[in-house]
Length: 97
Image: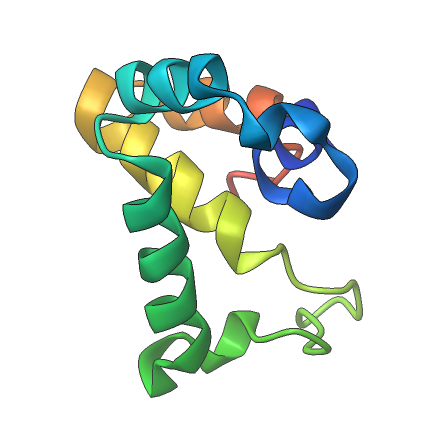
């Protein structure tokens, strides 16, 4: 569990998801509307190219794979703001290796 997962990916337990302020901040931080982010996550969740990260899959070391939603957020931040992989590791708790 990371801060980003709790803030952006775990919507059913976060009442802020209903507020316009949340959607405005999300758009500024990730450069697209939250609804488009959800569409990207849905697409990625069904893409055979990304099945390595489908829910229930494990890494080569036997650890559960990172949630696709966090990988999409990290990709958006990398592309939209030029964050480094070290920055993303710190924000998502996903190893850069």
